[in-house]
Image 1: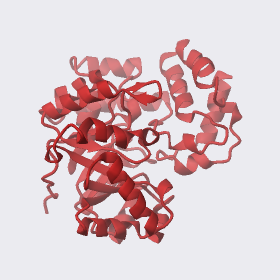
Image 2: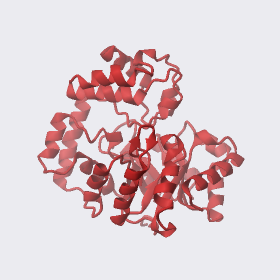
Image 3: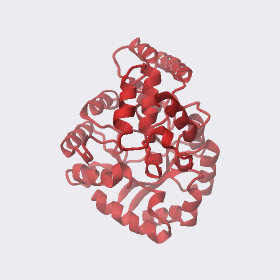
Length: 372
């Protein structure tokens, strides 16, 4: 049985509105408009947002940069129902109406149950979130209902058995996590294939970790030619069976132009490229880097206001490059107004919401010992 095709989806590359160009704490709308225009000029139409992205500014950016500048039939918009914003079925209708207004549309092409897993799934069931989404579809306010997922493959199988009406699944898939026992990228993809669900890929470059590679890994890709490190990561995800869309969270025009250079006219990876990726994975595992994607779910609930993803990025940079820059950022940028790693009180709130299932409390001890 063939995977379902969606007429709304043009191409297999989407603009994720989670990491937009910024001027201080505000979105740089002029730069974002240019990026949107380049994306649309390439014949691509798929945009992805959520109510909490960029502290609520992502949906507004979509309205100003896309909905108010292009006809409704020119673009496809995906939004999500996030657990933080509802505690009852009635709340879901209210937040949904706010999302429509914020995005400047009267329907969403895709509406996803956000970041599903054992941490929040029972809340969605208790509040009849899936049933409400299916009802919104009947009302014409949603065209397709799906879910985004952060847990192991068995739990994804459970959800898809509970709700076979789900039309599409968004999973994390990148070459480092593909065989990882925690993220289970390959197993989750296989569950989607088993249930005949088309796949949207998030975090194909793992929050930027597959762009700025260790020197030894970078040399391997340079041996193949001048293509960017991001190109191998994004094309790896797009080459997987059942993947209909790969998202990229781009924060400047340079990233947009690079992504379009190989995704406008997509070509799957060649055998020699797969072999190079396998070598890069071995280098990553040997370096034992912290596999944080920078989603920042852990930051909002931290009582000590520790910028956990930033400190992990500092640690990764220190391990990969061994220069002074990481220490500078740790001591002079990321901990001047926020808690140091040693400030962790081990409450565990961060670990409950971490999509990567990282042992954050232990890792913060490691960071503290390294920098402090």
